[in-house]
Length: 174
Image 1 (spheres, rainbow, N blue to C red):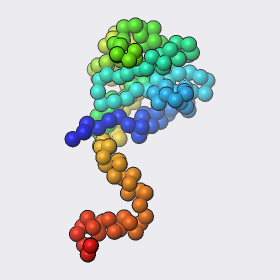
Image 2: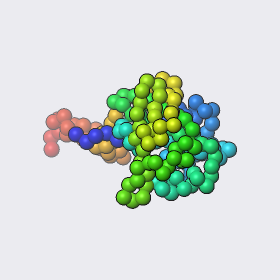
Image 3: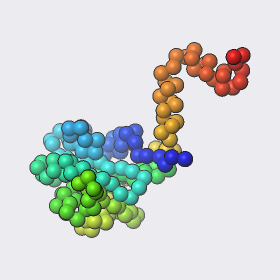
Image 4: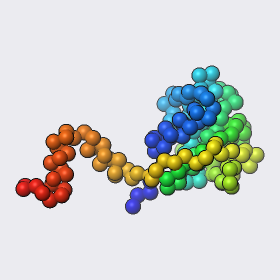
C-alpha cells in the first residue's frame, strides 16, 4: 500500500489552526505552498509531513533573507488520525541555513526530533519549537487512489452513480 502523504487538506487544517492561534489571516507568498504571510507582511513558513525531514527550496530561503520579517516557523507532524503542530522563530533557521543538508538540486533539508511538547531541528540545535495546543483530530489519512475515486464519483450525475452502484452490487442485468 502506498504511504499516505501530507496533502493540501492537511496543510489547510494546519494553516487554519495557525491563523486561529496567532489571530491573523495568512496568504501565500508568490507560488509557494509553504511560504505565507500575514497582512503586515510577516512570514510564516508552514511545513508538514509524516516523516521527520522537510525540504526548503533555495528560492524560498533567498526570498526570506531579503524580507527579514522576523517570521514564524511552523512544522506539523502528521500521525494516523492526528496532527501535532509546533511553532517558533524562523530567524534561527535562516541564520543557520549553511548547517542544513544540501540536496543535489541546491535545495536544503532539515530533520526534526520531538520530545513531549518540544520539537528541535537537528541541524540547528539552538532552535526549539513549542507545540500549539492539543493535537488536531483529522481522522484517518486517505490514500491518493481513494481521493481519485471520490473525485471521479463527484463528477458523475446521480443517475450514473446509481447505475454504478447497481453494477457493483451485482443487481444489474448488463
